[in-house]
Length: 578
Image (cartoon, rainbow, N blue to C red):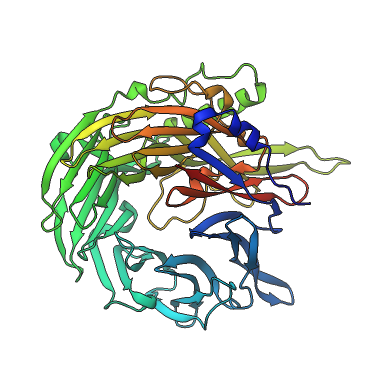
């Protein structure tokens, strides 16, 4: 039976004038396909939205077994949030691997891949989708091809856009090679190749350089943002680990020749997290969190540089110190919620896990990662960053045997996503930092795996350019810009409703189905904001604000209710800002 969430309308009436500016409409509830791993919004139009439902599919069948591949269904919903069609493309993808759906210009494309062991060749294909019917408009056409030099090599690739989304890029790298080699293929109208692929190389050892970002500017410059590592002695005897040392940022021309290298030790400050963007057909803007010490483990401030794309020289530089004590203390022993013993137990486990990472000497640092950048009417920028970690832990349990049988050990793996404090700042047209605000929060999302995945306790992860995945689902935040206001949506512990300024201690958020979804209204000019309760996740499928897709003043967002028995329930919401 389908359910429509009308109960929220009562809550909206109680929000007085605030309700007149923010509204939400939930569509019909439907079942998530058996075996599906997630559902996300990939494209929105004026009267429709398109969702991707990921799931495994049969690749080949043998007498003694079968092999599976990752696939996905395309789901279209209309302006009333009702399902129009659902197509899984399993027949069309037979023999190929699903890669992704990608909107480009006024079309929607399905990308797939096919690897030939005999030729050691990986080929990328694309086909346009008829949005009215959800069917492919023709056969798959090859748009890129990669050759492995050695059988043991692995090819990473990413399909994305250039700086102004006027072109599609296919960026690739051979994993396992001694040196770093990257290729960039530019695709134009109808996904036709726009020139030959550009090859970029550097002199760094493969395991000591990690590509974090690649920016293809409107004037066809390619910028590589890389993280440099060095081996350090660990706490345990004869154990070494790779520790982050500094950033390496280089600018290349459209022929692959290096033109300049940006200085990443600006004014004696060591950059530990960066974001590089190009203003609309103008200069580059580098935003970075820095430490006053080399290999510093804390954030001491925010630095902003405006850079000339022609020669890589700095036009202006400004920085603002950040008092690290204002950031939410993740290992604060007094952060327990005595009214909920189960949540307190989860908080203790989280603190123990983080403490172990530090003790193991794994180069564990408190990084802020840049999330969103909005342009303002006065030619400035509003930048959002979030305190974020992803790490993996394992635990073992013993089950005694019966009737003389030996006992057994089982291993459980946990993938932990920590989404912490939200930092917001305004950069004016001259590159100066006008204001900076911090909202304390502490969200922890955990995925539990079986014993077949055991990466090892305390394995800390930093997201690379080629990293895949759609997690976390419920933590993090989403943002919509409307006029001079930016609306930030996030799930939080109901006891954090009064958290509105830096220095306050936020209760941990672990059980997202019991949280409230809040809206933060941020004034772009002054940096002042107000916090309001939007709705309760107890009444609807748990919202995923971070994965929402925005068109104009509207956001399409998925909600998902996981069930121990039976299929998970899904609903789509449309949030409107005026």
